[in-house]
Length: 235
Image 1 (cartoon, helix red, strand yellow):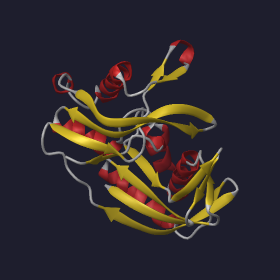
Image 2 (tube, rainbow, N blue to C red):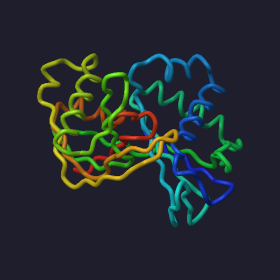
Image 3 (tube, one colour):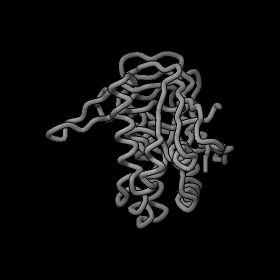
Image 4 (cartoon, rainbow, N blue to C red):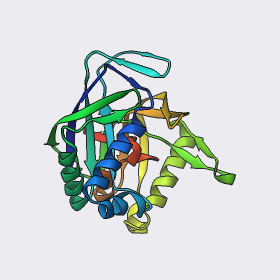
């Protein structure tokens, strides 16, 4: 299920590291709604089955601040599991109208509605990123290295994807999985005071439609539940 959450900011400026505050908002809303459900969604699973993106009406970006044309933002949330989606919806409805802190700013949820969720109908599809894709490689000593959407990066992305899906899909289905860039660009984001490269744009994926639908609904790449890797089907 997909939702659009329209929020009104107190001021027309936010930190470039805004994703961590949206993440905190989701966790806090679920905890208020039901602490056991929050733990089941956030604390227990190895891979979480949701992702989100944020639309900002950007006027300009200066250093670590994003200045906005108006004080409304939209959060788009995609949850693969139907029951988890309903829990998210109930938690978000419970947070409606409450003042949520966002560094030196704050916001309130003013509207929540369900959005159209498409379906991959073939064993291939072209996707567009709604939030950037993170390709993260954990190296010796648990240090992270972030890759671009190039030949080496795509190998790491495929390896990570197959590892994350090995308990959900059979080996025979996973063997046919492929990723091909079409038109992508590199940018750099801030997340919890770290900066790393990410990828935006269009790309092609081939694989069983069950796998493609799962990635479309739950997010693609690393840190998908933290506001990265949300996809839209364009072909």
